[in-house]
Image (tube, rainbow, N blue to C red):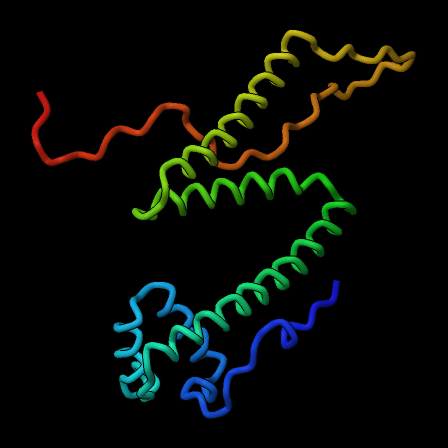
Length: 191
């Protein structure tokens, strides 16, 4: 699916104070708009370089910029991510074994990042934790099953001196504990 991003996005007016920004400045402005109020962004934009852009603009200009440019930027990111996943899917199709390990490692990294973010929604953290815990449960069930039903050693007419070793288990990433975390200390002594 080829989508021309220029056809989707509106063009900025050539006389707009934000029309002359560099790509790096656009990225900074989008970042500011995602984390600050318009009033704060107006002050940041007005700051002289390198702190700001040295541009006097209006709230309506910022609103219009955000309304027009943020969806375009998100679409560009989505198209880039789509291409990356398309390449990843092709690699997985050619060699499917590492996908499981990579996916689990990415989930574990995501969980770590989510738990470090004080603004993160707890239900999202719990959802990712449940996925990882279900995987751990599945591994335990597989081990229990393999202990109860060992694979029979193939009978051979030849006797070899080499021992028959079981297949190695897939590499394990960080093991997650099923024990809930203790509440944060309040500094008060416990009894």
